[in-house]
Image 1 (cartoon, one colour):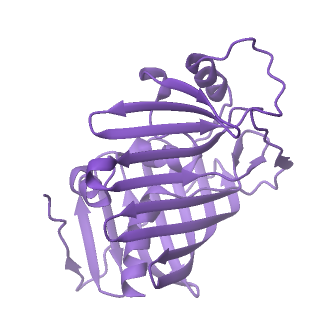
Image 2 (spheres, rainbow, N blue to C red):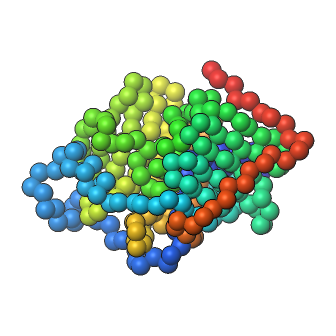
Image 3 (cartoon, one colour):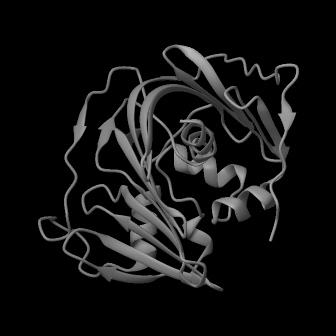
Length: 267
């Protein structure tokens, strides 16, 4: 349980979002085989353009979620509160039976978190955390992950395009890192994003099984994270319970007295 909660705190830095103005409906996403495509020829550029035509506009998000964590024989169920001030900060609070067991404050410059079971806290930049998690992170990648967007700005990259029975898929390779982004065929919503480093036996994927439509956006209804490393597989299943848009939010964060600072060793 100790290990599970600690790892869950970290992985929550890269994975949660939701919503609460009561959704209008579930979006019925389509696969390439049953879609009616108005374009005679699809290209990677057209897929990227159509995806970004799905506008998401907000100043703040206030999110409530429930999540299940599993790594080998270790499992944990928690609730989470996520506050996002767009492009500025993200506050994640993880609770067990209503008690706050961990908090993380994320800004463009640094990541801070503390967890109650071991009485420890972390403060640092993204370099050490990225190496420890096995994937390159920054604030904007995390923010995009939380709202069901590609972690990268796809308009700035070069991608090959393949069509499968289920998805339109964009692929790219950056050094030893391979990335893939898969989209459904009706609204070109993101269904899966994958980051793999075969040489290091690391793979990270975020899956968005379904979506809900709101007045100002189409957002994920659930999210499944799978992280594969040499020490095994970590899975987090997140259900999006409620979200409030554009409230005036506070972001309180203070490390309790007596906690020990931990440091992430870099290879």
